Image (cartoon, rainbow, N blue to C red; front, side, top):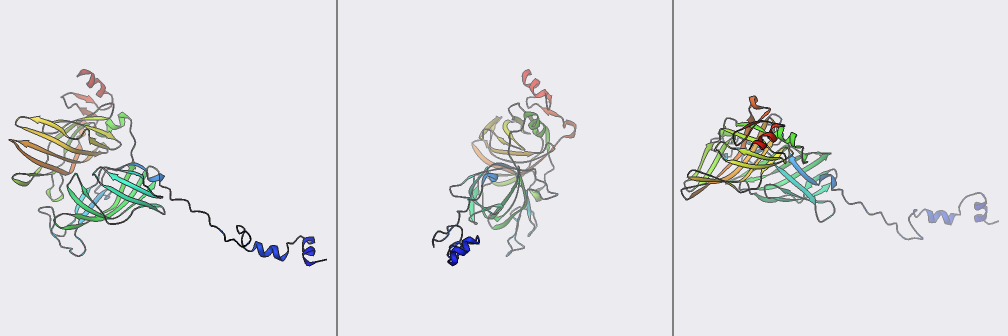
Length: 345
């Protein structure tokens, strides 16, 4: 009896069969094994509209710092009156829309400041790719180059860090170390009313921190003024906000999540001897505090000057914390009385 027959009888494969098996389960008579194709990175968790959460200077949540570059630690500040070498803190508000890119694992981010950024999924994070992308912020009319932007998502929330260079007359370092956003969702009208409805007052202006300081640029050169007074807001059932500003003008915004924007842009208010046009007004609110950005122009005596409020800060008046002030003069309850106020007009 041959050795092979003896091995079969004992339940063992012949040596030749063992040699073939040693080539691997996926091999076939000497052909090399073909590895399975790697699955493309999953972009689904990142896609959608994301709003910055309410900025908080105490925890530095969504507070960016613009500081001197390491090579010039004692550089002059771009803010008049700020000591050399001192960083400037800028609250971050607004939206980014992440959409699937053209290639596997690629994502395109579009901000409400008019910039488009390219990302790719790397491991458990979304990363700016390539680094060194540059764009002009159409709201503040300033260029910046991003060196890194890392995003990590957990359900409806994301955390992010950003490093870049802010371009002014000189270059400055831009750092957001504790960025936080929530996926946008159309909230029920009562919740939007609680966030935005009511009477708000501008906090005391602080020139050293740009808080409630308006920069004007016109034929006579740049100047600054303090923003003061009250803003009355009523939230309508479709989450449209009717707002009256301290100058007596009435504007409309649209709220989604914790963020409201001028809708439509380019609204104009005509007053005695002048007209005011708002191109951009964005507000982030938690129901007690507001952070805002406003850009527009004033035309008077045939001359036009532009203005920008980059760091708006308002507080809801405690005595009216559960009331809305109708921009046309009627006071109505914040949650149910809005409808009654609308019927009376």
